[in-house]
Amino acid sequence: MKFTYYGHACFAIEVAGKHLLFDPFITGNPLVKGFDINTIKADYILQSHGHGDHIADLIPIAKNTGATVIGVAEVIGWVMKQGHDKVHPMNYGAFDFEFGNVRMVPAAHSSGLPDGSYGGNPGGFVITTAEGVFYYSGDTCLSMEMQLIPRYAAGLKFAILPVGGNYTMNPDDALIATEFIKCDKVVGVHFNTWPPITIDEVHAKRIFEAAGKELILPEIGQTIEL
Ligand code: NI
Ligand code: MN
Image (tube, rainbow, N blue to C red):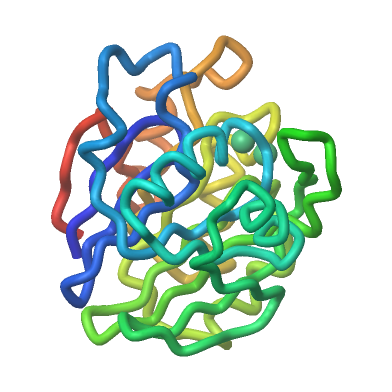
C-alpha cells in the first residue's frame, strides 16, 4: 500500500487501485506552503471527526474529485448540507466497500463541526483489504478500547497514530498502544503543526527502537510503500 503524507493528520492510502484520503486539512497548515489541493486524487474520503484541523479542506476536495465521503452520520449530515451528497454515513460498525472492509471504531476525543453544530462521536478506522489490514486511530488518547482491534482484525500491517500529545497520544502513549493493537509499525501524524504538539523526534524514535518497533515520522509530501 502506498502512503502519502499531506501534513498534520491528512494522508492518502492507495489500495486496490483506489485513492483513499483521510482528514483533509492542508491549506490552513502553517507547515504547508503553496500546495494546490486540486491536484489531490480521491475516490473515497474518510473523515475521523469534525474538527477544523481534519475537515477544513473536505468540501472543496470532495466536490472537485467527486469522492464518496465516509464518516459518522452527524458529520455526513453536515457534508450534505454543504452540497455534497456522494456520502456513506456510518457509526461504530463495519461495512464492505469495493476496496475492502471499513470498521469505524471509537476514539476517545471530542467532535464538533466548523459551524458549531453537533459532530457526533469521533472515531478511527480499521481497514481490511486484500493487500493487508491497517488502523488509523483518528485523534484519541490511549484507550482500553484499542485492545479490541486485534479481535476485529488480526495482523495489522501498520497503524497511523497521532503522536503530538496535548490533544492526543504522545509518542510514549503510542508505544503502549502498539501493545494493545499488536502492531510493530507506526506512522506518526498530528505532530509539529503548532507549538503545543511539537515533539522530540529523537526521543520518539529511540523509545520505539528500544522496544523493537518502528516509528515513521513522515515528511510532508513524502510517499512511502507500507
Ligand atoms: Ni480533534
Ligand atoms: Mn486534531
